[in-house]
Amino acid sequence: MILVSAVMTANPETVSPHDTLRVAKDKMQAGNFRRLPVVQAGELVGILSDRDLRRATNSPLVLRERWYDDMLLDNIRVLGAMTRDPISVAADAPLATAAKLMRHHKIGGLPVMQGDKLVGIITETDLLDYLITQLEQDA
Image (cartoon, rainbow, N blue to C red; front, top):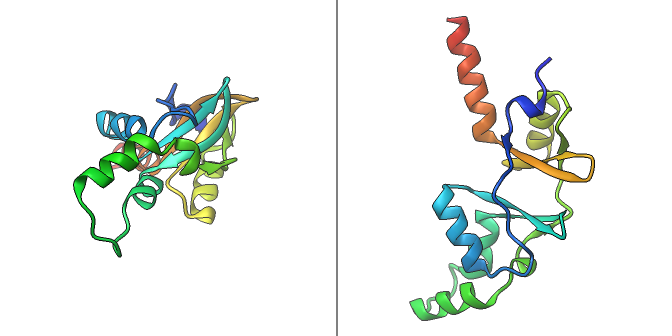
């Protein structure tokens, strides 16, 4: 049985709930991430996705100038846009558990916990990479 810990990305990049959305956006762009766990005092308190960022800073119904977007990114805190108490998975859970949670909740990634400590993140990309490896080995 393959465990989540064998496929996850260990020690993921994180943000604080008090960081600005610009800090989060810059980290996402630099690492090519679509989500970041939100950690405060060593405790997982949320997750911020690229969709959360877009919702907080971009309305398709409002046409505005670039300076307004910059103002939002520099002044809104992660706390105001993140999903609180995210669904997570244990590092020692079967990989199928993570896949089922992601499918059932229609989410693209899960923080991976070992007890109360964030130890990784598992995403759709991690699952697909694992599947590709398995399919190529079977070929």
